[in-house]
Image (cartoon, rainbow, N blue to C red):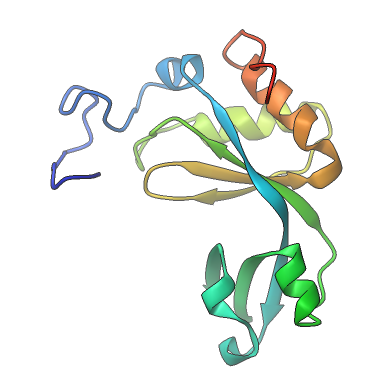
Amino acid sequence: MSEGVASNGSDSDVRGGPQTDLAQMLASLQVDVREGEYVFVSAARSRSLPIELAHASVVEDEGLTCVLRREDADARGLGYDFVAAWLSLRVHSALQAVGLTAAVSRALAERGIACNVLAGFHHDHLLVPMDRGEEAVRVLHGLRGVEPPPDA
């Protein structure tokens, strides 16, 4: 949360604060599309990857996984096999909220769209196949019962 405002997770604590009610989250769901193409790269030794260029990273038992812009991975000769569009859900879901990830992944799965979810403090981020990014945005906006804006 910003500007030093503390919260115990209740939606009523801070106007516009993190949401826990699934119906409210879906009704207000908006999707932002990050420019570019993104790829997952992994290495057993973290020094092998340009962590300073990572848009996200996860330390796993097998090594470090980073999400990079495709051109950054290509410039460094890093291998990958999944090229993704990066979608950010513009709804401030509380970390303890239940159901948003399930609703989103179920809707995409019903259309056969792969989805890799990254949770941030303020938003959830979805990496979907690049060639299905626009379709994924339409599917997600369908969860709130309205069409996406013309530029989405």
